[in-house]
Length: 327
Image 1 (spheres, helix red, strand yellow):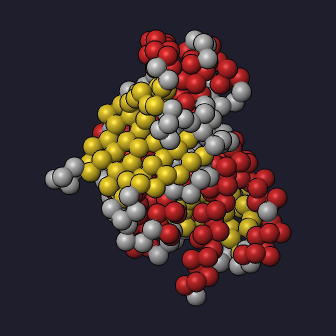
Image 2 (cartoon, rainbow, N blue to C red):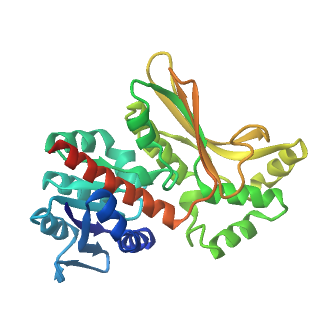
Image 3 (cartoon, one colour):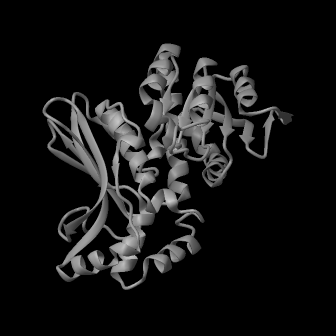
């Protein structure tokens, strides 16, 4: 089976995914009967389709849609727009309408337009997958989708932003907020503009993604009650540590008795014995509250570009399995 792929957005994750395709080319062929070709790329600096310049991302999508390959896949990896999720939503909608399968690690489309994109993909007979939007390559959505049939998610809580967890852990060790952030930026963990992380927007977007996909909520990051972290929290961090506890930026959502869903991102003081309270700086974890399995936890002890790129890779394999099974 041959897959032709367009990468929309060509940042660090996209480049690591491209290298991973090369590294795993033999394994893909042997284990999954899959051969992949990257035939189009689109960035703000220029677009190429079939080795020739093209006008924009939409032309790159049309090029892939016209491919004779068994799988025509658009991978949307542009930067999160926390205001409205664009232009990623339009890219994905265009790809689905053109009959392409879609993979994204961009939180915006799932946070702002999950139901409409999901329904459009189902109607078009294509897949819309997004494992890399939360907790890098750790299976969250596929875990629920593939291994928890009949289970209803009633809520969740988690530490799902690595930058803020690193900063809070560093502040516990005596660093100031600015010093801790600068260290994260120097290590490549935080972006040069880390406002989406420290102001809580990244966690709010992930909260909306989780609530929409796992609880059928219809919320955006703007609907999530949100608190970030700052130098003003240093005393609370130190005081919690004196009590043997830890301050964590916790994302959570709950289904109310009437059926509505409330969601928030907020600093919480947790005991060291709590799964979330005991997380090291580079670790993330998510606890799902379910009706049949009680609480189920997923942990990520460390995360980097390879793991996020792997989520995209895993979604690609999932699509190939689905198509093969349907034949």
